Length: 130
Image (tube, rainbow, N blue to C red):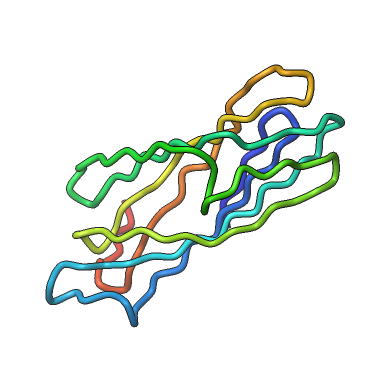
């Protein structure tokens, strides 16, 4: 599990390799990731947009930007959480994702809540200890 807190917004990510949807012989590897966004601050916040940086095992970067997450722009009052699951395919057996959510405080102020970098690891990639 990976976690980051920005201005009272806690983002927790738990990635899972999806063996049943992956086809290693075709260089197709799939992960799901469950995200929990918790407002631990004292102001109501709304998630407006997302920005992902997805890097495969060859160093190829793919960026994804757009409104909300899974079709929603959740509003979180103090103490509330929003949870969703999404996924990503890669052509390599490992990679890394990181990103941010552009948030708006109820008073109009904007900030970017950091999504922690998280590792996408499959059993098809040998582990090396450096």
